[in-house]
Length: 190
Length: 190
Image (cartoon, rainbow over all chains, first blue to last red; front, side, top):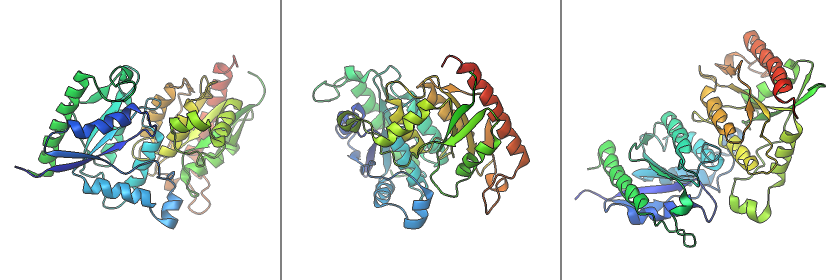
């Protein structure tokens, strides 16, 4: 039996009742036996990016913590809402900080994307913008199946925010199983 | 739409010696007689977007100041670097906050884009992501000429950061003249 892989989730929403945060919380239970998924460090503690701050006082502790967690993980799962047809500013700000580090955490890192939205497109536009940014950072972005949870309010329990839509659960399981294989293939961790 | 037009300039970089900030500072001198350009409120004081914060304590003062400046202006010029082939998180975060407001500041607002980059593409990937994002809040995006300042270190004075490159100055002037005509045409009903 191969070694267990470790993946972390980063969530692009800070809202407590967020469907994306709820989705991220469900992943550990839906992952295959060989892939352990945990929540990554919070991104809301990361200050607004300013190159002058980086040059005068270095990288903030919150940025180093996020970068270390990404480096230590075998894979990264970004679960994010779509804000204004693109990436939430808070998430992009975290990526912008991490992008300036040597020993680049995203480089050659297997990355899977998931998104939930109230509308029918399920966050496709945030995901394709993230894919473009990750090309620059040389991340290894997993392709299919893609997880676009459209009309999210019908797929989570209204009170507990538990994911209850079977078709969505099935495709997430498929993605996580595919992602585990992808990580083993591209990192040579058989 | 007669009379002098007031246009607010928003810069996506916080760095003091930013080429984009230098470009933004140069715009008032290049504007046609009928357009007055002024720097908008700072965006680095805007906190990370969190819907829970919006719902509990309302919009932060810095967001209201930013929104009011956009509402009061006849047009907006966004001058921004490209971070990781997309919009800087800090700028996107400001847009995300403002996007949640009633009496939407960007709706039907004429917006022109400019960017500087050290590479050959001049920030085009950032600009096309902004175009997609601002579609969501119904901004009226100015088309051509586009201002994409490539190889920026060759076009600004190394010490003073004054824009020196004549073809760049010409295209910036052309854009501002055309943007004034655009505002007078599409903003006529305001």
